[in-house]
Structures are given as C-alpha cells and as structure tokens.
Amino acid sequence: MTHEAVHTEKLDEVWVVTLDRPEVRNAVDSATAQALHAAFLAFEDDPRARVAVFHGAHGHFCAGWDLQHGARLAAGDGGGLAALDFDTGDHRAAGPMGPSRLRLSKPVVAAVSGAAVAGGMELALWCDLRVMEEDAYFGVYCRRFGVPLIDGGTVRLPRLIGMGHAMDLILTGRRVDAGEALQMGLANRVVPPGQAREAAVALARQLAAFPQATMLADRQSAYAQWDMPLAEALQQEWQRGKARIPDALEGAVRFAAGEGRHGRF
Image (cartoon, rainbow, N blue to C red; front, side, top):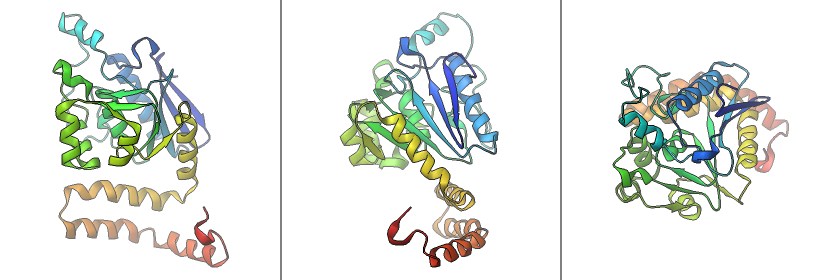
C-alpha cells in the first residue's frame, strides 16, 4: 500500500493497482495523484513485474479530478497543482492525475467499471488496453465546468479513435457507453458487469506469458513511430526487431516441434 486510497496487489508477474476513494467515485486529489504516480513507478522499477492492471474499487474506475479538492485550492487552501511543468525528455514525470505523463516500458491494462470520465477517462487512455464492463461509460464530463484536458486526453484520444470521433467527444463532453466505445476502438474488450477486474487480470496474465523482450520491443516501436516519417518509423521498427531475431529463431524451433499450432496460445 502506497497511500490509503491506492493499493497495490502483486499476483506473481501481474500487479493490480487499485484506486479506492469510494466517497467521490474514485476522483483524484493531489495526494492520490502522487500515490498513483509512485505505484506505477514501483511497477516500472521491479524487474519481476511484467504487466499492470489499473482498477477502480467499488464499481467506478475514476470520476476525474476531485473538484471539491479543486474548490479548496481555488480558495487558497494550499498547493498541489504547482510545479507540474515538465521536461519533455523526462519519462518519469508526474501529471495532474498522477501517472498520465509516465512512459513505461511495460504494458498496463485498464479494468473499467462505472464512470471513467474527465481525468478518469484520460487515465484509461494512458493505459495500453481497456477492458470495459457493459454498464460502464466514458465521457469528457469536465466540459461542463471549464476544466481542460491536461492529462493527455487531447493527444491520446485522436490517436486512438481518429479526429472525427475525438472531436465529438472532446467538444460535446457526452457520455459514451460500452457498446459504442467498443465500436469506435475506445474499448478493447466488453465484459458483463462486475467482471472487468477478473478479465483484465486474465488478459494481463496472457501478456505476461509471452516472450517479453520481443513483445516490449514491438510495443515500444508502435509508440515511437508517431513522431517519425514513414521511412524513419520503418527503420526504427527494424532496429528494435533485429535485436530480437534470436528469439524468433528459438520460437521457430518450438513451432516446428509442434507448439502453438492452429493458432493455439
């Protein structure tokens, strides 16, 4: 446990980081943001940890920034949003919601139940994959109060679902239910109510079981290519992949011996 509102459970190579502030539907204040940031840095730095699941307790993923806390800041009740400017070269920088500026070397799966709105939606977008319950929902609900998207929402959302869908969500702030989220690529899996955590852990275990070096090289290549022209992106993909050719040859031997035939994992 890194903070009373943030719990970390280690399930062998899979870590479950849980946000637990039920009185505000897991909205994040300054102390909770710092604790989330610390929890995911600990995951990054532990060589035994391979995949993390980001989970919200008590039926909600995260209702965004704690506006009651924000009101206290506006009244001069202390800091918390100070010193959030960051160097673009700092892969370990903290964001207003905590881990939103971290560029981890390992994947994170969001287990989305209930509300994942405003900054909570941005935290889900920060994850590599999103497992969503049928009655969960996304939305830029902060549109109603003039609160900007400053945890990657205007960057990650267009890259994930395209500019047209992103502008619809960003400008209107409307609710997006699970079926539509799956259709537009905002959700990767939709599961029955109450099963997001279990399904996300199962997915994380699947990722953790793959040969890690090759999977992580491909993941990093996919993220890095956004900033590059096509030729440069293809070259960096080759450079990362070339280092994993011995793994590929080992895999070919295992396939020839009968492992993984007919699409079996």
